[in-house]
Image 1 (spheres, rainbow, N blue to C red):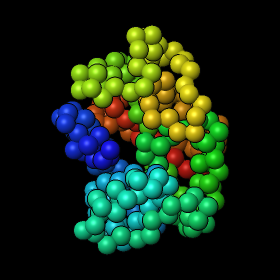
Image 2 (cartoon, one colour):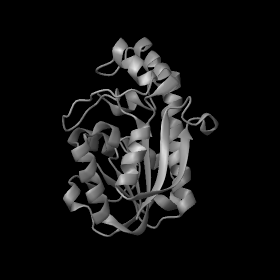
Image 3 (cartoon, rainbow, N blue to C red):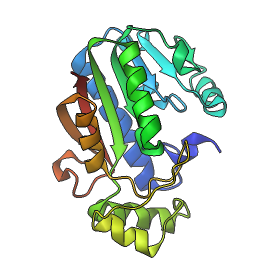
Image 4 (cartoon, one colour):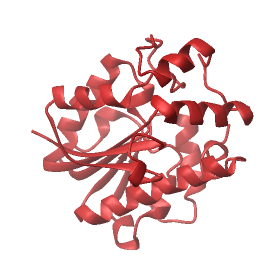
Amino acid sequence: MNYRSLTVSNKNLIKRYSHAKRFLLSAELIDKYKPSKILDYGAGDGEMFKYVKKNYKKKFFFYEPDKNMANQLKLNLKKYKINKIFYYSHKIYKNYFDLICINEVFEHLNLSNQKKVIKNLRKISLKNCVYIISVPIEVGISSILKNFVRMITSQKHENTNLENLIKSFLYMKIERPTKKYNKSHIGFNYMLFLKFLKNENFKIIEIKYSPFHFFRGFINSQIFIVAKLR
């Protein structure tokens, strides 16, 4: 499936708007921290690249391990001159990047692989590297609204059922599959993820919510965490 059909070219207006807003927010945060070398870690189809200012495009690198997604990235950005795409995590330049974006990645990984990502981030980052991390909000009222939209547009996630919807709404724990990559967002709790980052020695600098920061975690699609490793 073409990834754009799930994001900025989604048939649903709400989802198109939500994804476009998260790319815009990513670009705004990149501009705020004025990096010299940027890595999009888990770049997907590279859509975020289109939103960053021209002067950052020359400083922008990609890491995308999925071959199909990497091919979509090349096709999506064929009109642009782009820097290197890394396909293997161990081949990413060491001690090189001062800003790394990890958007919509952690919610798909089990705990073991989340820790592997953190370990790799340490290897490829410069001292005082800024990390822009976004994950979905899948608890509380937001979970009800998001899953309602998914169901009426025939885009519901795996393990969507009444019991899990109630648990998500009440912030209750849902057992998630332990497989290497989990496509579904069901059971992901961004509040527990914040604790995970702190336990991994991240210092959180700021938090933003998308698409409507004013509503914070109450009614929103994503949370953006700007952090540094201690």
